[in-house]
Picture (cartoon, rainbow, N blue to C red):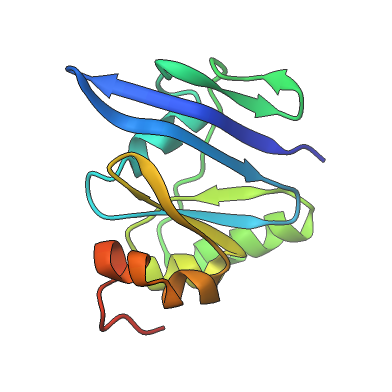
Length: 148
């Protein structure tokens, strides 16, 4: 099975840096969440990862192969239960998964690890417990009252 790596991804629109040198690895048998407030750069990072838009700098690798310009098909299921079933099935087959969604609780509960973006930069990363207890993640994204 292959590892998906994002290396120093940068995207600039109209002179504004939307994504700033994002690095992450999605390894086999793992589910990774890409989370953050509106405007954090999640969708742009995700679109660069799947080849829908080209980064201004940086690369996307599948193992050692540069796939930065290869479009990759995605799944758009309609219900949270369907998503969880698909994620479980893919993970059991040894496939690494990257999820970006605004349903924070459901996404975090489905993930082994998450990255929190803000202003195009990763401000926190780690397993669910680290994200939920992070003062930075709470202050910028989750809020003080966030509970699972």
